Amino acid sequence: MNKVFKKPDVKAPRFRQKSVHVLNAKLYKRFKKKFPEHDISYADFKNIINTYNVKLGEGIIEYRDGVELPESLGYIFIGSCSPMMTRPNIDYKKSAQYGILTTHKNWNSDNRLMKIFFTNYLVKYKVKNKQIWMFSGNREFKRKASQQYSEDWNKYIKVDSKQKVSTVFKENIHRLHEKLKVNKIASEGYNEFDL
Image 1 (tube, rainbow, N blue to C red):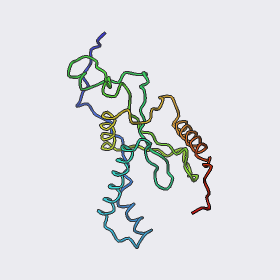
Image 2: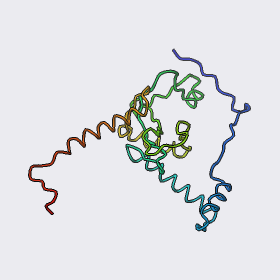
Image 3: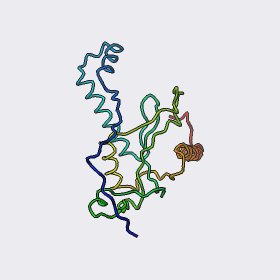
Image 4: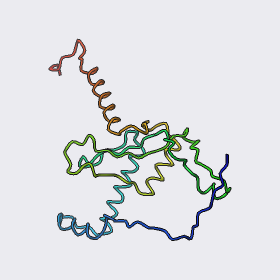
């Protein structure tokens, strides 16, 4: 059954949510006050932070298990999820082009979806208000991750759509402990004092 697609009014008024940029002159002044020994310009300051963030994003995409954030803030990884069919995933461009409601099929990833997960479940130190921390990638990172995912979607950790991320980490810890138990047994001829 094909439903007729009503084109959206692209000239209608839009609600734009205000965004807050953390990387600004106020942060630079606080940095200079706290670390006066670092004599760098504002442009260099921004360039260092942006370069680090790009490299961090590349690490998340490249490594299957993701990356651990500095200062034990948490972990970020890309997961491969089977879609929950709560609502159709509408392809608005094709729907507007053909006049019929069309959905994304994700044929290039065997109908699986990419999700970027952030968790601070296994942090080494207690972080104040850790339950309100979140990660939101910028558009450039999301596009790179999506492109890499469609090329090699089978590489990433499979996560059930209804599963908590903390259970994925519990399973990995359990697997690691089992591996360590096997390796604890020393061979018969082993002598730790024989150099």
